[in-house]
Image (cartoon, rainbow, N blue to C red):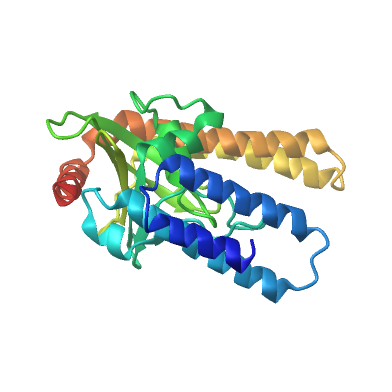
Length: 281
């Protein structure tokens, strides 16, 4: 977008109320602009500057949209969660403002922007979200890794329409390791709040879940050895190996959903979640 158009957008913000429709219209115009110019681009430095400037315009609009949210610090000092508007790594994250430090992330968006983002996944409501759906939601906050929820539950609240507390991981790979992050999603009438916090201490691995993973992963390794023995030609064995690894991971997480309440760390994690909910209040 040229400087004049960006200036007009900024000036318009000072004399009218910004809505989610306004924000999405401007964001989509920017995305289309970069999509049109990227194929034959020569001036990458210029594109990077345009991208940065465009994100700042959107960030200012988001501040206006979040000004009545419960977490003032995010509305005032949070940065736009989008990393780029160009079709490259980091594109397509969930619209909103976030505050980050080394061990936690506090994210705020409006319910309208949230539901618009997830409409392709047919999220028409945030009622009765599953661990898998929560995994997809939390993953939309990070560009370089996927979030997996091991255990989640919905909490009753007199102040909020929905509260979900979860434990899980943020990782690029799958493997047999216990959850090391807390995730809390809180919804009121207008806003969605997501807080991610790295656990202060490790959760001891559940032996039943470990055994389930190991038994399936062992068969995966058998298939992989079969693939190697074929001089790397037995693609069916390779595919089966990957399939069993995925199954082992899914069963491992399902085991935590079924058994985490019996862990000695459960009460401590619950207290952490309660503290996060109180912080948003």
